[in-house]
Amino acid sequence: MEGENSPNKRIELLYFIAFLFTGISVFAVSFITGSDIDKILRNTIASLIMAGCVIFMVADACKRGTSGFLFDNSIKKSRFFIAYFISIALACLFSFIPSVFWPYMSLFVILSLMSNCEIGMICGTCLAMISVMLEQGGDYSELFMYVIAGAIAIALFRDLKEDTSIALPIFICLMIQAVLLTAFYLLFQNRRISPGMLIMPAFNLLINLMILLIFLNMFGVYVIRKTNDMYIEINDTEFHLLVSLKEKNKDEYFRAIHTAYLAERLAFALSLNARAVKTCSYYHRIGTAENKTGWEQIEHYYTDNNFPDEAIELLHEYTDPAYKKTKSAEALLVLMSETVVATIMHLLKQNKNAKIDYEKLIDTIFENKEKKGELKVYEVTFKDYETMRKLLKKEKLYYDFLH
View 1 (tube, helix red, strand yellow):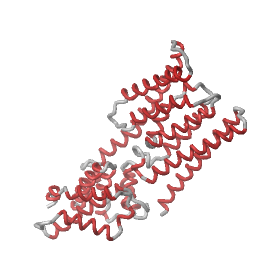
View 2: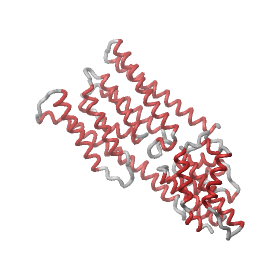
View 3: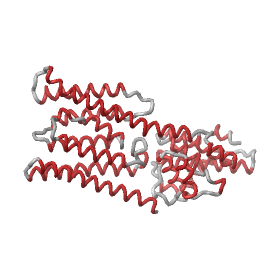
View 4: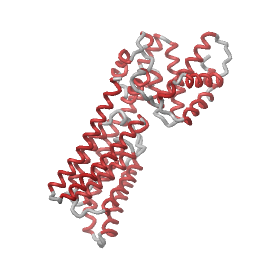
């Protein structure tokens, strides 16, 4: 159980540090700016409430596992916390400069891509509120500009992929920000449009443009592209680990191939992490030919070949019963697919001409799992569970290839 408790302790420590850092930062700025005691207490307490809200959102996402975060953020949660600490410091510093210069639109995008859209939205909103509270004469009109712009920006970049063109989303974000900044002057400050009024919003757009271009390019290279390239390589049947498995034990090789086919189809249908599911299906029995089945014995296969962190996490979860009390839906997909494939292959090995009632066989497998209570540890809804059963029954033609 040590493997499970250690990550939990680290994340709990990060929760505490984030909570404390937020309160201390806001208290320090309030005190330095000479605010009265009532305002200092108001700012500090409000900031702690907002930090608690963000921490709650992150904790909720952690409970949902890989499905609770974008990309591989469920494995590398430190990304979000680093971005959060920097953003808190910036939120405090923004109170010393005119609100028209605040690049919150970019921060909303960064925080969401480092976690998920819900966390990015609530976190960005809380940070903007902190800046407004600390600012001399700050009011809700500044939130009007940045929360709306941030929400739209998050929506435009939520499905970011390696081949996604960022030019149009950035252009739309900047145009919306420009409109909102203009509306801020006209609706809330009752100013008339003049050439001079456009100078400061132009600086805001330029700052946001620079931040977005730098961050999105770095994120694409070091997160999206790196993970995609690795999956393409290791999920190729010609990858050296699979080739080696085929040479040592063809039965294990074909068991892995067939399991991966079924599990991947289920993952796509249920909108789960199909790439990690396929990797787990291919490699969770990679050491069987050499009688290596324990996690300590097979972990090096994955780390030595630079498997993505989320794939290693799923492999660890699947191959080590003691690693986690609650298993992911992805792990259940692999389990049910593998059980179906292994059962059919076993029956055919006993009698090559056996006529198998696949629907009845699948119902029996599912019922046996239910009776043994093996499904209680998995995070899956009844609807998803029944969907798995129906989809596996539809693969009758594929099962005929196993003969």
